[in-house]
Amino acid sequence: MRVPMQFLMQKESAIQYLDMDEMTFERFIIPMVARLKFGTQTFFLTDQLEEAVISLAEMSITEEE
Image (cartoon, rainbow, N blue to C red; front, side, top):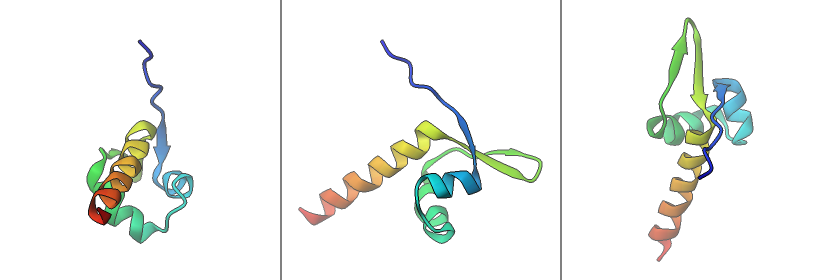
């Protein structure tokens, strides 16, 4: 069984990684993932970011049917 690699990504990097503007990221992605705060910095797990995008895509397809 393959164990997915989990990496931490800072908020700014996550926004760039997903190619989203900050408002879209905060509205649609943040409610679907865990946030890790260390001082003033916020981090996300990369696998959760990817799962959130897949979930949004699946919801979009379901709405179109």
